[in-house]
Length: 198
Image (cartoon, rainbow, N blue to C red):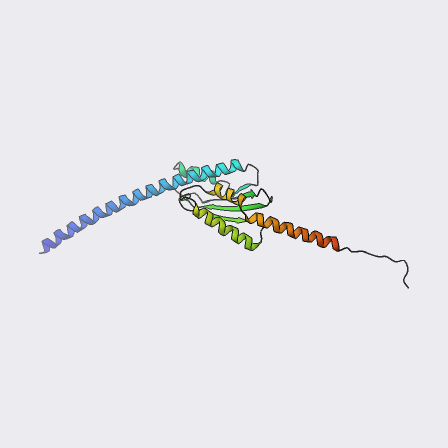
């Protein structure tokens, strides 16, 4: 009886060792596949960022949060480091054609972008808080409507340039400036100096 138990225990150990070996191989394969997918994603992100830098060549139009991001990503892609590089974060100053308003588009790209959606936030001095909130909601829903796996930062910039929020804002700015001009036209301050007082 003890011999049967020992044989059963030996078979269980062998089976467990096989499962551990298979699990280790599967984990390594998944890690390699994940690394490969992240490398593909990072290559796409770098290509899109280089395209944006060529579209916006002026100094303050595209601002990188980390100036060394290209070197860090290149080291990772060349397998000189195993550590993932930091996420790509930058801002793009988008000029709206009709109103000449500037929208600062803050971009944070997860390592798996474009297969997951990026984090985008648009802000502008030309918009009040409510309009800015609405603009960001509309931008988020526009990005969600795009095909998964598609690079979308250029599309977001184009969408911002065509956004109707700024057309509404432009007419409101015109109304406010017209009211101010009218108010300035009616109000005048005069100082009267008299050389004698009765």
